[in-house]
Image (cartoon, rainbow, N blue to C red):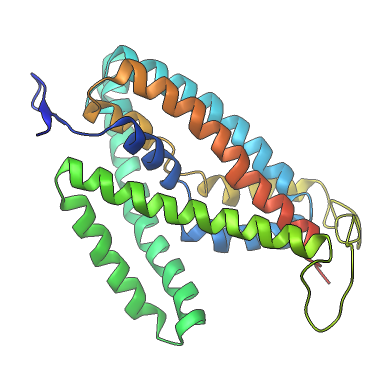
Amino acid sequence: MSKISVDGLHRGLKSRHVDLIALGGIIGSCYFLGTGEVVAEVGPAAFLAYILGGVIIYLTMLCMGELSVAIPMSGSFITYAADYISPSVACATGWSYWLNWVIYIPSECVAAGIIMQALTNIDGYIWAICFGCLITFINLCRVTLFGEIEFWLALIKIFALIGFVVLSLLIFFGLLHGEHDHGYIGSEYLFKSGGLFPNGGLTLLIAMVLMLVNYQGSEIIGIAAGESPDPEKTIPKAISRVCFRILCLYILPVFCLVLIFSLE
């Protein structure tokens, strides 16, 4: 049975649940579609935007983790804002965060629908509705079941990215190709057509607005702290593991993409 604390929280999330919830929360459909837009706007230097974004997220998670360990509660950063800044700031933070997810969740469903429509030729809005119902069901489940479902769904995302990295490396070294064998690609696409910044260096900063949306969900680790039975141990470990996996599962796939993808 799930442990229940004095504040009424069902502390049923295990360490592996927290790890994968934080990681899986930032790997969504918008990542796969949004990355294409970032690469189109910035060029091969798109992987630098993800590195900069990773540093920002890492620093943010350090701050969130310290607060979550010191004061684990269900209200997370909204409660922290009320206690240490002001209730008005907490109100603005809470409503903006609510509005953020109200917009983001449907956008994820639409993005998933677009991807599935390309794969199945079934109208995207049907997939979007199905995914929306599935997300609602998962969030209505009890904590232990919610953590288990999120754990396995996150693993699927991770294996998909690992599979992409492996395939891209095979293409890069000329071991996998289509009708025309280009052999070893090298830096042909990385510095071709204007170099790393074919549209100028300013586009890197402009694209950061779109790219940082793909990191949304990392703050869930602070919210999950209130449902963790041992936040003093699980949260610091989750932060260190997630930041390392962000490097491997976000930056590395994007770098592999720009190595094998021609903007022409």
